[in-house]
Image (cartoon, rainbow, N blue to C red; front, side, top):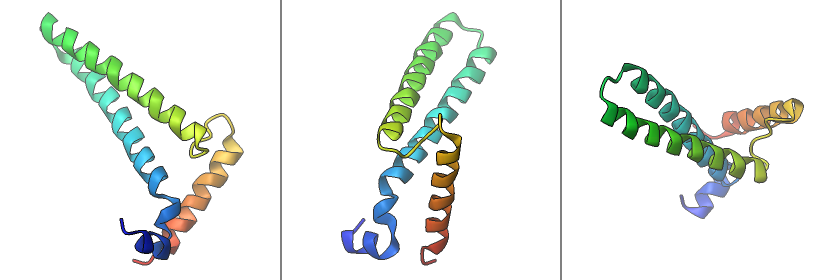
Length: 98
């Protein structure tokens, strides 16, 4: 996004957070889908592939979570701080021009 536009819309503060959160949700969805596929699969070869992909999705989820925690974008062990962060993000989103 254009830097001037980011500052005008307030997106300069949320860009990394939005990308990381979206990626985290995608990783979670992948984990759920691979797990479901494993329970429905009859082929040993396909199960092997799905287990590998599930392990990679879990690893990716961990890496994204670590990144977000290091950047202060995700505070899973501090509920009060996470709620404040979520409320601030929601307020920022509500104040963006539509």
